[in-house]
Length: 324
Image (cartoon, rainbow, N blue to C red):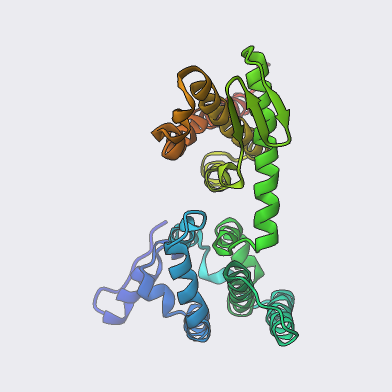
C-alpha cells in the first residue's frame, strides 16, 4: 500500500515532514507544539523565580567534593528525558496529579520560612536542600499540568535522577557518614583478624602493634559510595530490563561500598604496622580513594555482565519454539 501525494500542490510537503516519529523531530519542532511550548514557558518562569537559590546550588556544588556530581546530573537527566520522550499524542494534562508535588513544594517553603522566623539558622546544605527540592516539586507539578502523567511515566527514571541534585540535610549526611564509618570499621576489623594481625577495637579506634588508628568521619567514603550508587542506578536502567535484575544490582552497592572502604582501611593499617606510622600520610591514604573506587567497579560490572547475559539467555530460550 503506497501513499501518493500531489507533487503540484506545495502545501502537501509539510505532511511528509510531520509524518516522522515524534521522538525523531528536532527540538524546535517539538517545542513549537502547544503542550511543550507552555511547559517551556512555565520552566523559564520557574527558573527565574528560583534563579538565586539555583545559583547558590551551582556555586556550592562547584566547591564541594561530596556534591560535585550535582553539576553533571541535570545534563545526564536532560539527555535521557530527550531520548525517552514519547509521542506528542500522549500529552494529556493531569491537573489533579499536580496537586501533590505542588502541595509538597509549598509546605517545604512555608515550613522553611516559619522555622527561620522562629530563630532557626539553617546551614548551607539545609537551605539548599529545601529550595532545590521545592523547585523540583513545582517543576514536576508543571509537567503534570502541561504534559500529563501518561507522558511523564516513560521518563520516570531520568526525572527521579534529578533528586540527586538535592544536597543531604546535615542530619541526614551525618547519619550516612556514621553508618559508613562504623560499617567500614567493622569490615576492616574482620579483615585484620583474618590476616592474623593483633588488633584491639574500640568503636572506630584500632590499637595495633606500635600504632593506633582511628576511622574518622572524613574516611567514611560517603562521596565514593554516592557515586557508586548513581553508577549502579544508571547501569541497571541502561543495560538491564527485568526489575529483579535491577534490584539485585542496586542491593549489592552498599555491601560493596563497605567492603571497599574496609579494605582501604585494612591496607593502610597493614602498611603502617609493617612499614611505619609515616604511611598514614602516604599518597595511598591521602589520594588513594579513586584507586579503591575503580577496584569496587570491577565486581559491580562483573555482576552487571552476568545479569545481562542471564536475561539474554532467558529471552533466547523463550524465542525458540517448543519441539513437537
